[in-house]
Length: 203
Image (cartoon, rainbow, N blue to C red; front, side):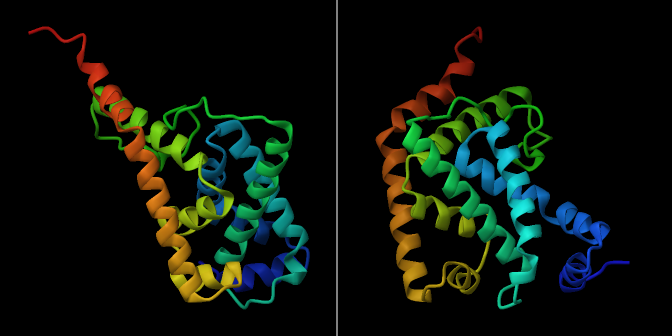
């Protein structure tokens, strides 16, 4: 029997750990996607996803239902990531060395019917895109993750960020332009990465 999120939240508030575990199962993949897109690192992403669920559980009493539980949870996950990024910036730590194809990553990032070479090419390209995403400001990265990765509506993003629809659209437009510009600036790297797997072919 499929229970609504709202009912699971109410049961979780009453101390039903099984209910909260069901919420975790429903959203762990999406929360992980958020944390990975922010960090570009699978180990850190896993830790931050866990932190996000812990913070959500501790804050359940404050969830008023103005937005959906999913939107509220994604906002918490994004804030956890932003807090971590600030810590890393203070420590001048950068972690960009892992690729999306690493075992244990989000299975949705790899298309299973691809040939090994196609998977390699896609993963290398995704890695380069991830690096450019990591170089954006926190606000730009956040709104791109919410819209392009999680597929939240403008209204949901506005509710999560507590801003107007116009602000959401303008921020998203600037973030898309910034990412596109960074990708274009490194276009030669994308071309090289795509060509490299073919170098060893005969003929």
